[in-house]
Amino acid sequence: MSEFEPIGQEASFLGHVGGIESRRMADGVELRLKLASHHLNPNGTVHGGVILTLFDITLGLTVEQSLQGALDGHPITVQLSTSMIGAASAGETLIASAQVDASTRTTSFVSGRIRCGSRVIATASAVFRNPKPAG
Image 1 (cartoon, rainbow, N blue to C red):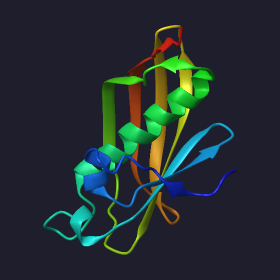
Image 2 (image 1 turned 60 degrees about the vertical axis):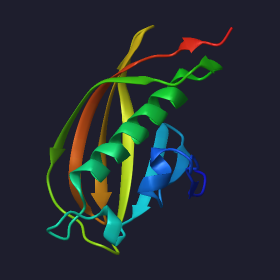
Image 3 (image 1 turned 120 degrees about the vertical axis):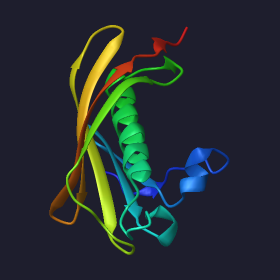
Image 4 (image 1 turned 90 degrees about the vertical axis):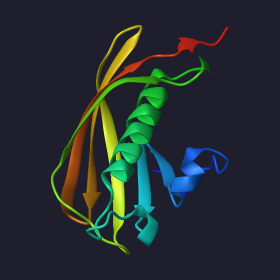
C-alpha cells in the first residue's frame, strides 16, 4: 500500500475542487479529502457534488488499474448511481474506495463507498466504457 499523494490535475476541474489525494492499493485506488469550507453545502455538510466527484474519480481509477496495461485514454463513465447515507462537516476526512465487480472487453462494472472515520456516508455503483489498449 502506497502513501497518499496529491492527485494533481491542478489546471482541471479537480484543481477547483482542491485537496484530493490518492494512493494505489493492491485491488484498487483510494482517495482522501479533508473537507474545507468550499466543499460544503449551505447546511454545513459535504456537498453532494463533491461526493459524486470523488466517486467518479475513485471508481474510474480503480477500473484503469484493473485493466493493467498501456491504455489509449481513460475509462469513460457511462452510468453512476449513488446513495447518500450520512453527512460530514468541515475538518473531517473522507476516504473513497472501490472495487471492480465484473469486466468485459469493453465495459467494467464497479462499486464503491465513502467513509468518514468508521461511518459510511455514501455508496455507489457504476458502469465504465473501457479504453482501448494502446497501439
